[in-house]
Image 1 (cartoon, one colour):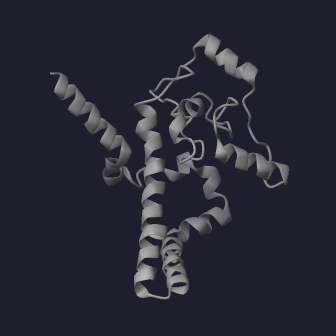
Image 2 (tube, helix red, strand yellow; image 1 turned 45 degrees about the vertical axis):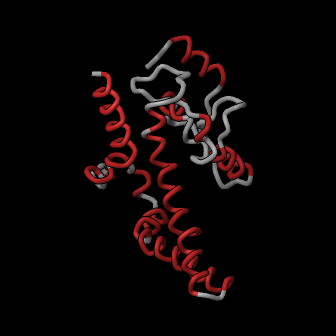
Image 3 (tube, rainbow, N blue to C red; image 1 turned 180 degrees about the vertical axis):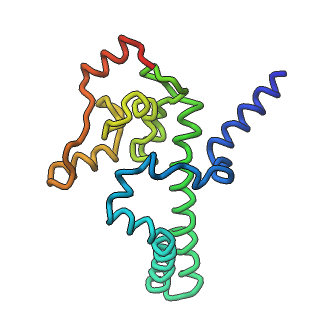
Length: 186
């Protein structure tokens, strides 16, 4: 009985990590979940250029390897390590937010789901692994809400704000956080 539970949990974790890609990709209604993004001409242009940008990033990696190493072997090794391995780790860091951050970790706020905060993933996910914080305050620009919660993405947004490239940045006050904890809202 116990092994069936472990196998079921591991199967669920694996599905949440990567298997969902094979049965749900492209099914979300863009008009419902990203209406504001669809109105932005620049973002629509970037969306259309996704595949050419991916190919270009790999081609540039290959060409840099060829330029620096001067051999086809050097170019291929650079493509593998600077291109393919980079993409692999970036994707798995991103996927970890919806698998690991719903399975392991700590919860600071009561939410209706099983989202957790996973400190050791914060650097690789640019702060997105403060997932329970995100679910508690989904409009916040910052997922690391406390001083010890490393949030590189939030720091980048703060830098953009300081130079005038980001505005109306949503922050969650410590008072609002305390209220949420005290009320146990989910």
